Length: 129
Image (cartoon, rainbow, N blue to C red; front, top):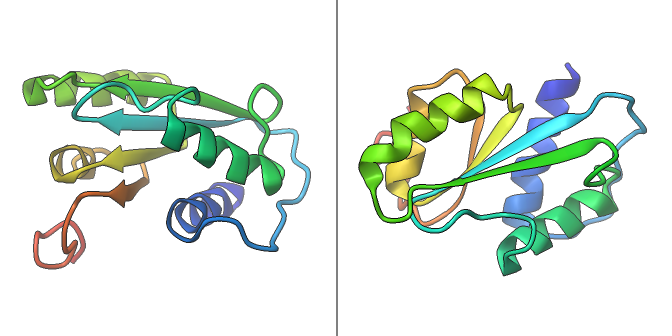
C-alpha cells in the first residue's frame, strides 16, 4: 500500500507543485526513475531539482529514503526499451516519463508511470484507457 501512496504523491507533486500534505516517516527507500527522449532528467537539471525539492517537502529526501535513477535516450528513441529494462532491473518504484514516446514505451512495463509533460491528451493517444 505504501507504494501506491508514493505513486499518488509523486503524480501530485509533478502536476500540482507544492501543497500542504506531508508524507509519514518510512524506513523504506523509494527508487524514482526518470526517462527522457533527450538528455537524462536528473536531480541536477532545473526541473529535476524542483521535483526533488517538492518530494523533500513531503518527507522523501534524496540520499535518505529516496534514490533518483535518471535515463535519457539522447535523441535515439530506439534505445527506450533498453533504458526501461535497466530501470526495471534496478527495481524502480515509479517512472517520471517526459514526452509521448517515453510514456508509450513505459506503458509496456509493469512499472507505475507518471507523465510529467509533453504527452498530449492521454486518453486520445491511448496512454490511458
